[in-house]
Image 1: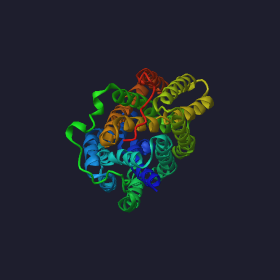
Image 2: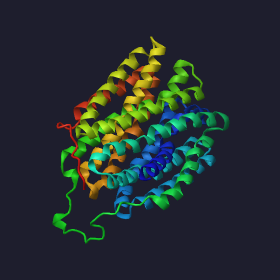
Image 3: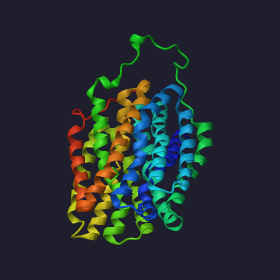
Image 4: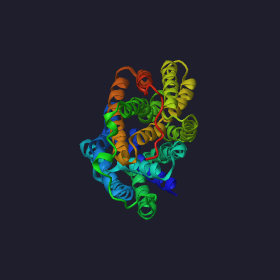
Amino acid sequence: MILSLTMAAQIASLTSLFGVPLVLPALRQEYGLSIAQAGTLAGLPSLGLLLTLLGWGVIIDRYGERVTMAASLTLTALFLVLLGVAHTPLAAGTVLVLVGAAGGPVNAAGGRLVLGWFSARERGLAMGIRQTAQPLGMGMAAAAMPLVAQLYGFAAAMLLPAVLSILVLPLILIFAVPPRRADAGAAAPPRETRPFSPYRHATIWRVHGVSMLLGVAQVTVMTYTLVYLVEDHGWSAPGAGVLIALVQVPAALARLGTGVWSDRVGSRMAPVRVIAAGGAVSLLLLAGTSLLLPATAVALLVLSTVLTMSHNGLTFTAVAETAGMAWAGRAMAAQNSLQAVSSALTPILMGAIIGWQGFPAAFAAAALFSIAAIAVVPAAGRAALRTT
């Protein structure tokens, strides 16, 4: 039940935060924007995330997951409705920042619930299952949102995650409860015995860094796949959306597989190193074949999508386990905040590169960030499987 609830809430949140790239053609047409300008708008929800997530993390640790998730879903739906009256790019951008500010805590709060309900040796698989919410949610969104945008416009398409948020809200209020613990109700430990901040040590910072670097490749593919297929390969927007939707199935399975892998080897970060290397190679091959072998380029685009979306559950679990339960809400919020830096800046950077040298150059640039991530993975390659 907990996994199902957190997945449903995360799907609602993620499609509101990252659904804009799926309707970029409609957004460009409605406001008369260039690719770089539309990419900037697509990154604005991540700016809202960045501005508010650390504060949300404190709220999660203090008031609990249920209250935080309910507030987030309510505000997300409200702000998405406001897009219907945003008639200028500036107004739309302002609302998208608010959507990001509201939608941030669902991922961290859901991760904290999973951390509490599952033991250390189960968390890789459990978090992998929960993290399939991103590819599955984006798959459903990719199948529906481009078609709705083509028929009714950008704002109408963005109402889909608003409806989903409202549907999930009562379930969260009823069922999203923390596990009972043997020490529940006990007095707070003396100050000298309370857990020290995990941020005194380099390991958690390196995990954050890996996630940020790999996020560049992931966001590049997520943001520009549909536009790339439409503009460089002559696909229709709904047709490209169907392909994106289908790719999410192997991407979800990859997250499950990497979670099991990490449980088996007792390490979250060693598999991440392998995933980063594979993603870098696939992106470089995609950049090299985009102009010469279009059919091969589409296959490599599918492979790159799967690989770049495979690491999230591992890095997210590694952050939570490294921090421990007392710091988990803040640490996972910090993780999402730093990922939001990548998510906000990547569309702007890659949009400029695409306008300057085309899509292959953007794919090659994304590969360089994946290569850098390999070097940042903690030297031991292991995240402690903590139970606290």
